[in-house]
Length: 182
Image (cartoon, rainbow, N blue to C red):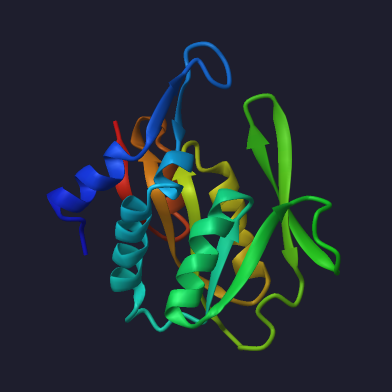
């Protein structure tokens, strides 16, 4: 399922570009303006619902922090559970974690060990606002699978395709994005 030209225009026009953030030369894609635009947020969520309603999902997993917004809303619409994937040290129960490379070092995400234990071989959709280099998303897919579930697809509102992160992620799962930034 693809966005109509009208839907794409509504979503794209609601995303603000902020030049030189977080550092010079970067154009930050600010989705807070999409979130506070009821029409654009509604178009986004309705599209995701229509796309995923027949996937027989058991859970939506959202990446800290903006993936929580889209993921939790979609989970509620689909009537499935939501599982947060957090930065290391933010979850209160027993966790498993996965490290991933950054430009200068490493970071780590984690998930509760029992996040998917209620449903054996749970089918999970991973959701985040944006895919850039793909490190966080790839680590998240690995965590979902380590926790005994199957990540059936990773979904993003924006794909910065010029950074090729989606290509790395396609080695692990299917990838879908609403808007591509070339």
